[in-house]
Image (tube, protein in one colour):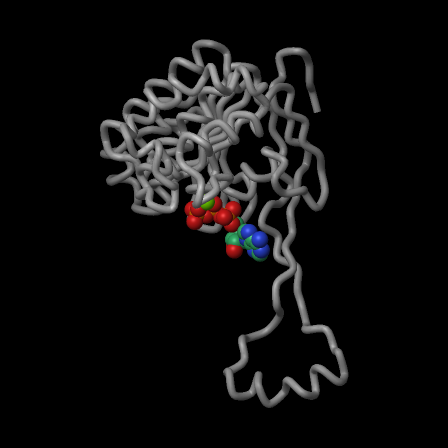
Amino acid sequence: MLSDANTAVTVDNVSKSYRLRAGRGQELKSTLLSLPAAIFRRKPPATKDFWALRDIAFTLRRGECLGITGPNGSGKSTLLRVIAGITLPTSGRIVANGRVSALLELGAGFHPQMSGRENALLNAVLLGLSLDEAREALPSIFKFAELGDFIEQPMRTYSSGMLVRLGFAVAVHVQPEILLVDEVLAVGDAEFQSKCFNHIRGLREDGVTIIMASHDLPSIQKYTDRAMLLEHGRIVLEGKPVQVLHEYLTRVFGKEEAAEVTQ
Ligand SMILES: Nc1ncnc2c1ncn2[C@@H]1O[C@H](COP(=O)(O)OP(=O)(O)OP(=O)(O)O)[C@@H](O)[C@H]1O
Ligand SMILES: [Mg+2]
């Protein structure tokens, strides 16, 4: 796979399998009845492999913005988690050239008992800033998140939108070179979402490489340079956002509606 100084991310034939329980679930009564036998025989439960990602291969140039879409369960979040290094691939290889910052799950990495202020500082350090740099970044993070006095409250009291406000603000203020954003932005209100997308546009102009997974097709069309459609863990289409989205919508709704939406 071609890779040079301009390559930010290389995903080299990545597959990811999970071990799932095989067969149909049992009813509670039969599970309880079979428990003593299972304990004494110590027979491991039957399992099967499920491939969440299959032979995923692509490279991203520095400053490119890739949109990943596809049905629920098609592997979008798994792919982002593998690129972020949170999950290891079963086979294949990922090379990320630069500091990766990711906003993948709502509230992930935040401690519910700690305040927004404490969490922001901790996360900025965990994402690679020195303590001084993190302290310096705090005012911009708070300004972006617009949480007012709630920044001093424990994060267990935050609404979903408040969690994503702080999560996004931290993720984009740690000088990322590669930014990964999953669906979570959708829980922010319209004003905050638009602010995030404008910020993403600015980061892109500064040469940050961005991958976003989303069902928000207009945003993919508007903000990305390239799009990818996943189905059952495989890339089924890749190319210009408008073409990929048109093809995706055609598969789901038929030709006429797809033409209306992507006009
Ligand atoms: N830890 C896990 N253990 C077992 N299976 C998993 C695990 N994580 C993900 N999967 C499975 O992998 C598949 C892909 O999941 P993933 O979360 O990547 O989908 P997605 O495309 O992000 O879906 P959505 O649009 O709903 O966010 C699903 O079938 C899911 O059940
Ligand atoms: Mg997902």
